Image 1 (tube, rainbow, N blue to C red):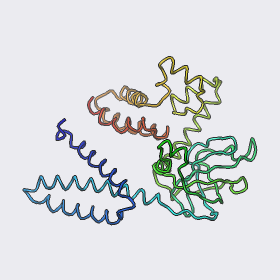
Image 2: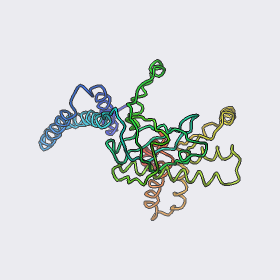
Image 3: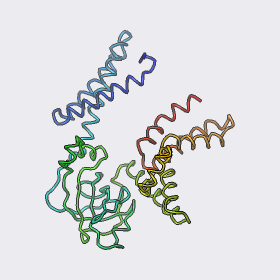
Image 4: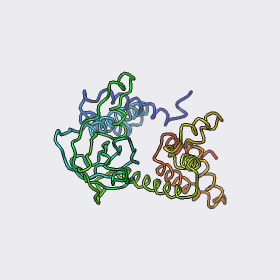
Length: 321
């Protein structure tokens, strides 16, 4: 394949190589040093670009810029997630960032810390169950809590290590830096400001909260449990209600793929908007609205990898038609 016909492909390959190299070098090379190297390379690229006979050297320097940018970006993210964990208990305000998962003795929540030493970071919290209808049972995405607990670092269990799965790295990729156990008397509901959270975090929390409200609204309709589980999986990507028997029946019929969100859902959104704005004068407006709708839907369903991939490449595919 001639990569000269696809310049962005070359850039993507070099960037991925830089990211992989940065993952290996983190902890051995200073992030600040990498940043200074990147600045020097960018300056050299600008100087060489002004020369009429420096096209090949400029291309080489641009590739080096992208490569070092990948190394620096990985180091920057890893440095942000590499936070010290205190041994004692500390107080912080947080927001429920993902739907709580009810266990036998605890309720697992992912919290986005809004105020405190780890403001802007995410932690995994295990709330102690106080009763069958306790306040912790009613926690939902977007709820604010004030907590006093002792944070612990994320660690790999022996079972996961034997299976060659790096649980610490997995959680770091998802922005989780610590875990904690919260007694029933160590927390309370609170009005929490999300100003110190990132824009994307705030958008995702808001969209996940809207998704849960939509699912709760659908649950109130006169639908059987199996019908509601299928509708929730097909429209909102919520597969928590699918029973083992229901999954097996769809797999046996060869239709299990309809229970997973994919580019098909985004194609339906694009097709409907294209039909509405079929007139040539409205075509540009239709394309813009389609892109907005596609990314809004991707955020609404929680940005799963399959939908994220489809949303990313959709502008390039739609430009062909």
